[in-house]
Image 1 (cartoon, rainbow, N blue to C red):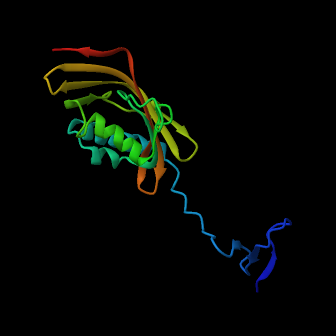
Image 2: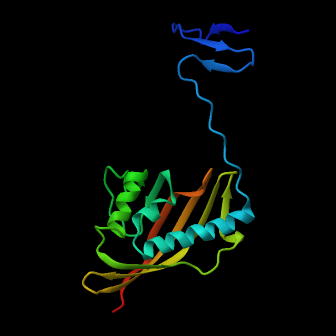
Length: 192
């Protein structure tokens, strides 16, 4: 048995139907919310972050944009280590969404890259104490890394940077929702 009641007391004549199951639904566009992924298990998160960092490192080292993008959430953001996107449409330097993040990596390690080689070096170990957990769905990992670059002209450069990865738990495991990486005061050093 279902009964109809006004959706609001305003001038709108839309109606909401109450079903016998006691749930409320709008006639036209009601959708059930997607089930939430399981909360992050801190012990499992250490292994998953290790795996994500290894996959990220490996994708950069072989300059594989697609493999890099497979690690990102659709709504991901990046403030890149060597990014010069400081004007619109990049939201004052923040690249938001798959297309904008991909654009960064195409310029950093892809077909538009000035580098013929990019070799990232992260700390050798990741412990649970290196991670910060935010609610049931987010974990961050911060630290310092170096990147060895070789330009098309053969110039070798070492980059000293810091990073914060923020991961979100999804049905497919952790995905990157934010990478904020920037050069330290040491910056880029020609090493040849």
